[in-house]
Length: 71
Image (tube, rainbow, N blue to C red):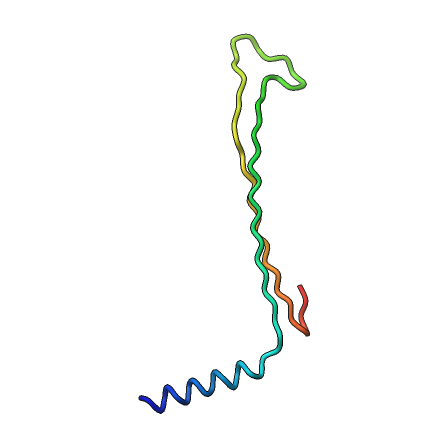
């Protein structure tokens, strides 16, 4: 069992030594937005109340870059 660990560790070391420089980047954007609606461009009907709410837009970006592959 000990020899298996040594062999597997040396194999992983050889693989990692042969890899090229790689770059991975992750970005996260959260954009909350408050709205108060009280009849913009329209007349408010009688008896209707104004509305307010918060909405959110979320975005996540992943970028990978290598010598041979660029995204």
